[in-house]
Amino acid sequence: MSGLVAALGLVAVVVAAVGTTAGGNGGGDPAAGPGRPVAVAPALAGRTLAGEPFDLAELRGHVVLVNVFASWCGPCQDELPLLVDAGRRWPARDVRMVGLAVRDSEVALRALLERTGARDLAVLADPAGSTAVDWGVRGVPETFLLDRHGRIVDRMIGPVTARWLDERLAPLLDP
Image 1 (cartoon, one colour):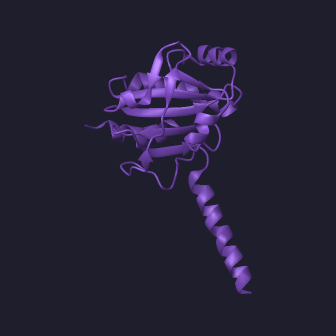
Image 2 (tube, rainbow, N blue to C red):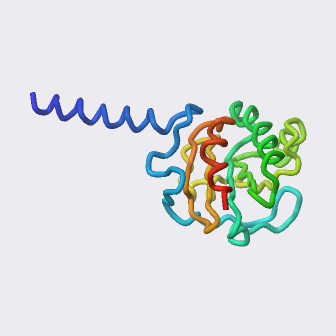
């Protein structure tokens, strides 16, 4: 009987954890939250699809949104226009947006960025997915918010929503 109770307790913990981290319900990583830094963000550097050099470390002093996505991911395709709109709402002086494209072809990525109006998004390709693994990515889409000190302060597994951006990103932009 005590084994059954322990097993049911474990199932409840797993269900609760999954419920707080899944999808676009405003959840996120339960260890993260606005104003609660979790860890310094892993390295993210290379050339963007536009051929520009990029190094996340150079963005210290800015709030940064890192969106991990792929052209073959339906929710990612739906989410990109929302991120483009957020980029218009919060100019680059306030927030920097970066895409990390996982296991994708450059041709497919360029077509997606053009189709969704995200052609100005700084995107780094991660064809093998190794950078995503370094970031602890569980799937696509996944979004990380970094504070001005380069610390991950929030994370969304699944597509972000306008509400999530308003509740989680906007407060980081206040001086």
